[in-house]
Every structure is written in C-alpha cells, then in structure tokens.
Image 1 (tube, rainbow, N blue to C red):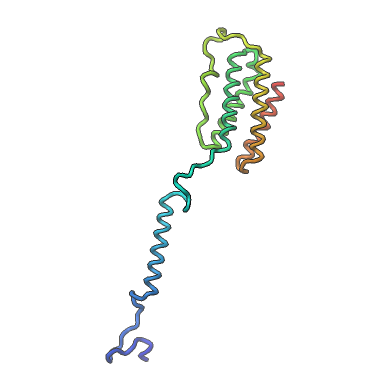
Image 2: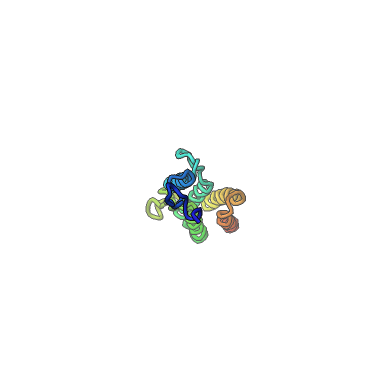
Length: 181
C-alpha cells in the first residue's frame, strides 16, 4: 500500500514525515520559547508582575508598638537607676520589658533597638538627685497603661500570625499594672 508509507512522486515513493517547516510546529516552538522567556524574566525580577519598582511598602504596624515598648524599657532602666528603693519591685518588670522589645523586634525580623543613653546611670549610685518613688510609680503606671492599650488595639486588628504575640504582651502589661499598684 503506497498510501501508508508515502506518496508516489515521479515514480518514486517519498516518505511522509512531518516537516520541520510546517506552520503548526513553528507556532508551537515560538509559543514555548515566549513562555520560557516570560518565566525567566519573571523569576529574575524577584517581584510579581505589575509591581512598580518605586512602590514603597507600608510601614510595619508593629513599628509604633516597638517604639512604645522601647520607651517603656528605657523608663524602667532610668527608674532603677534613680530610685534604688524600687529595685526589688522594678527589676522583674524591666526584665519583662526587655523581653517584649526583643520579641517585637524578632517579629519584625530586626535587631532590638539599643538602650538609650539617658536610661543608663551617669555616675556613682549616690551622685544622682533623689527621686520620689511614688512619682516614679505614677509615671510608670501611666506609661504601662498607654502601652497596654496600644498593644491591645493592635492585637485585635493585626494579621493572625502576630496577634498571639501582641495578646501575650498586652496580658503581661495588665500584670505589670497590678504589681505597680
């Protein structure tokens, strides 16, 4: 059967193989090449298609909470330096505030902010002007309350991955308020 293996051309049988120049295979090849180019270019840019290079990311919602906790940590350190009679009461609270700053910074994939210079003792223990311990406690209570409210508010509005951390920190602030009176 000549039709099965080829067509007679000039008395000879010519095999019917798919031609490399057929339009269907050229289109398939061009489509595959274009798709490969798009995938390579997308992979090399490192960002989704359509995202502008100059688009700035929104600030991390934890930024303000981290700043508040850093301030609180530094206030505890300053209170420890200024009011030696409060050291037994404030030392565990200061340690917790350091842990909060570290945890918030870790959640933001950053290093914790360094302690401010004003929170460090400036000289020998007896050289500082005496401070009213009751006034120090009032100031710390106010700062704890504000920080707890800010943390609680954000815990109810933030992504689910960060809410447990903020809820735990807010609960810790409630305990600190009980300790501070």
